[in-house]
Every structure is written in C-alpha cells, then in structure tokens.
Image (tube, helix red, strand yellow):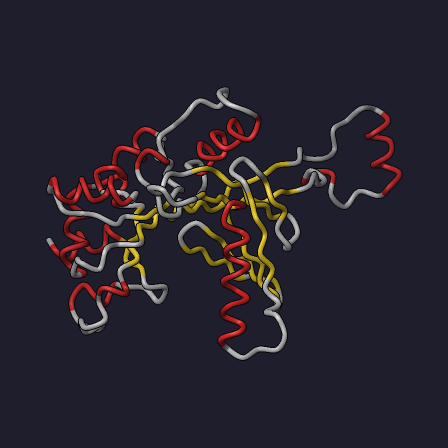
Length: 276
C-alpha cells in the first residue's frame, strides 16, 4: 500500500492503478488537468488513474480490506480543502480462552449463552490536515448543520484521536507579519498548532504529531529552534519534524543532522537534547 497526500487531495495506489480522492467541487478540473498532462506527454491512451470526488462528512472504503477514509472540512483561504483520517476495522474473533476448542464444545457454549467472541472494533490510525488555517481545525459542534456537516465535525474530532497526525506548520517565527500571512493565506502558524493540540486534547502517550509543509524561508536549524521553543516538552517528545528538504546543503553526517531519519524526519526531543 502506498498512501500519498498533497494539499487537499489524497492518492491511494493499489497495485498499479492509483485512485485520487479530491473535493467533489474540483473533481472535474482535476480530470481536465489529468487529460491535459496526458496530451502533453503524447499518450494515446488515457492515464489509468482514477479520480473520485468526495465531500466532507463522507466515509470511503479503501481498496485494502478493512481500511477506510473519513473526510472532514478544513479552511484554506478561498481554496476547496479537506482533511482525511485513515482507520481500520477488525471483525469479531474468538476470545483467547476459546481458541482451539472443537465445534461441539463451541456449540454448547453458544447454546448456554456464553459470549465466545470479541466485539468488532475500529482503530483510528492516521490523520492528515491538508493545507488549513487554524479555523479549520478548531472544535465545532457535532449537532449543527445537516448530516454531512455533523459527520464532518465528528471526523475532525476523531482526527485528533488518531495515533499519528500529519499537520502543516507553514509559519514559525514570532512576528505579527508571520501571523498575518498565516491567516491571509490559509495556513497554520506554530502558535495555532499549540492552541489546536491543546483544545483538541491531543495528549495520549501513544500519539505522534508530524509537522510538515514548513515554509522554505526557514533554514533547517532555525525552523527546529522555533518549533522547539514553541512546543511543550510533552508534545516535543512525541513530535517529528519533516525537515529533510531544508538540510539538502548541510552534511548529513555532522552534528544534529545525523539524527534525521531515512524518512526525512527528526524527532524533536532528540534535536533538543543535542542542541543543549
């Protein structure tokens, strides 16, 4: 399985045919863009990619058994944008103490009304905010609006219950200019992230947040310092920063850069330890 997200769309590649989930309001334009790129490449046949329009509040079954995606509304200036969470469903199975019993014993237990199976369950695995301002991530009522609005609000709430949250962090410096730009362009300032994580109670010890989409105006160490200074030690210990693109000209075998993982991320608490 390969999962790729960019801006307000998601791509799920199953075998050799990728499926892109995009906001329904831009689906036709994305189709046109796909056809235009095929024409520029001189392809006689249409690209095999499949483009599916989705609306905030919808749930989509993914091509891998047991996986689903839920779509929630975010706010990215005047651009249509949504976020996604990926979850997994697990069917009921025999409880450990009843595994290995023969069919006759099982039938007897069922006849006596004994519960021999676990309850079906779902797990919320990964959430991706997409490009969004702080307004798109603040908690909202799950009883307002129509059914899709209510589900969208619920799915946003569930996004902060996932084990992993991929969150944009475009603006970092402590300045009015950076705050104004984040609001104007529909992106997050690091102070917004602090506010949202606290309000949405993103605090379990098994949860991780990955900060990404950092503006190219920041050098790697500057970005890491600004993030480290803004986050609490509790969040920093569970925070990864996608920093690889900012360290291209810094020797990867020197200093803190050695801590950058193969996936391009650095654990913020590791960075804090070596910088001190």
